[in-house]
Amino acid sequence: MTPMPVRQHPDAAAPPAHDPAVRARDWAEIQERMLVPLHVTVHERLGVGEGTRLLGLDCGAGLALLLASVRGAAVTGVESAHPERLALARERLTPREPEPGRSGPPAVLYEGEPGRLPAPAEPFTVVTALEPVGCARGDTARLIRRLREAAPYARRGARVVLTGWGPPERCAVTALRDAVLGGPGGPEGAPGGGRDGSPGGGSGGALGGVAAEGAGLRAAGRDDLEYAAERAGLRPDGSGRVSCPFGYPDPESALRGLRATGLFDASDAPAGTDPAQTDKELQEALHSYRRPDGTVWLPNVFRYLLARIP
Image (cartoon, rainbow, N blue to C red):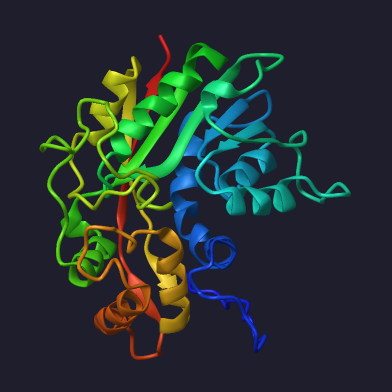
């Protein structure tokens, strides 16, 4: 993806870099767009458009919902881990005046767990889980819980998409994370990993707050999505891979964007208890990915699995 200019924050009394509101803004302004190729691909595979009633799990700052709304879908988003991001989603998706090019009805956004949503007027036809799993202990278990909670709100035969990190050897962010934090944790099936669907320590999604429940990182499993679909009672219906390079105009933007993912917050990593030290290690590791023109480029591949609710 072509690097884009990033809005700067020139205030002398700017809030700390790790303040949740600052990180949410950096996520929305810098990092979230890196996943647009994944969002567009799955929307096309799912046939999202007019007549689609879409429920977005862990909707974050709402960019994927906005893209679905532009295609004509009626979108509902739910977010429990990042209220600061949800506030930005409300800014994006509930404008005071109609915006040109937006063809879908107004978005509906909720803070909380999917199982506590009010019953929709009509069942959802599409459920999306677009925050990739595969890096944090417990993130697959958390995804299973979300899918189970969401299923009663969707009609039989509704389409579902699950997303995850691709093979570590094809994800530069995985290598970068390992260099900064000293290597990944064990697979989620290992003791304490939560592969049985129970809370296995940390959670929060691979791109959205690894430290939410307080455990560490793990290596992405090649069958994480299939396992999650099986445990959630879904019927697989296709899969694919999408290239989503993370491109930044300069190292500072890269630091801010990657910091906003939460991937470098693992509490059991040696540097994880000192955010300033982690930032320093990350800045040094980014040198390997800097291009002659000063931009930073991190190639990555993400997987997606399509499924249906029986």
